[in-house]
Length: 430
Image (cartoon, rainbow, N blue to C red; front, top):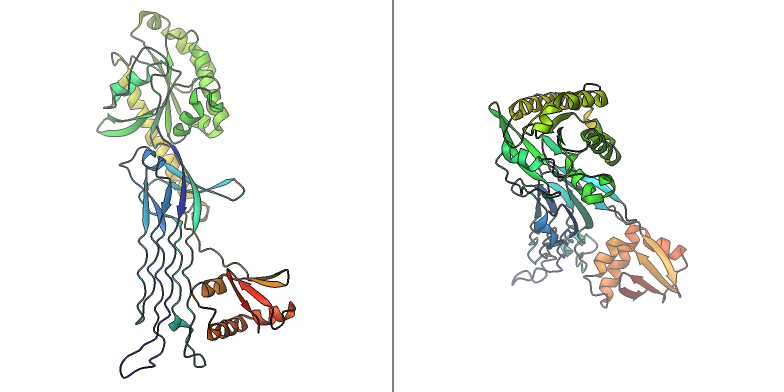
């Protein structure tokens, strides 16, 4: 089962603005009419209950959104790039990897609401945008803004009402196949189940989702027997059915070991409601020591939770177990609803909305007598302009004056004849 995936995602680049002038028979100098470029497509993650693993993304982990269309003459704006939707199973946790290697949780996908994870770049301005009363022949346009690049880590934690926990070969697969239409592999050896299994259980005209977590052994919280991967899925369950093997050499020790693994993996897991069920009551040996097991389990649990004796093979005791489980689920749902109402809206995790990237401040540095200007706005202008044309250079100088950059360059000691670099473009200061 593929339940973790790394995605490299890039929002679409914006389209470039157009440099164009109206030229008609009776309007030979009709003025600028270059249109803006279209915005690049953004990337969204959407929950989809038709998926139950991340396998479809495992080998398609680099995703590019469509770029915006370039602007055209006659003030035609380029079309926007189409948004890209990434479908994931419900229960997927989306984290964004930071430059330092750490990751921040962005969203928990529990429904089909779109979650924006990478913003497309804005389209560049056409030369019409730069027309003024003193500049009626603008030769500048903007390159489209680059789309946002992110590295996402997706982690699937299956959604279920009930988690079925036990040591290997305790009868979990038999029980879930008895209660639902799930048909996991069943065999008389440990670790028959190697990935979580979901089944819908019908009880008293209602239903709930039961999940079989593959068998846990000592050290599971540290990854022994892939336990840490299995326990990840158990985090979502509201209630646990803790299944004990009645033929085990020490069912009490098994019970304590599983709970210790839950506590070591996450203290929250150990606090969730548990229902104890001792399996294989149809075996004479287990039937004979039933009351002794009930007494010993009552001692280590202080009488809580209740203990049910069942047979996953014959069905004995299963109806009572499921009825009690349903009551626990309903009680837990009521408690969760009460807790949610008592929490202010500001404290709830919002659906992640990726903000627009802040514009980097304009900086001036010197390197071997060359003045290097780092300005996103100017770099986008020079990328689409012909700086061999003195008129373009003059208009760039006016733009730098408007931004207050010309004064900053003079204060930094620039003189006529010095070279200035903006992005990949070099030109002479005058």
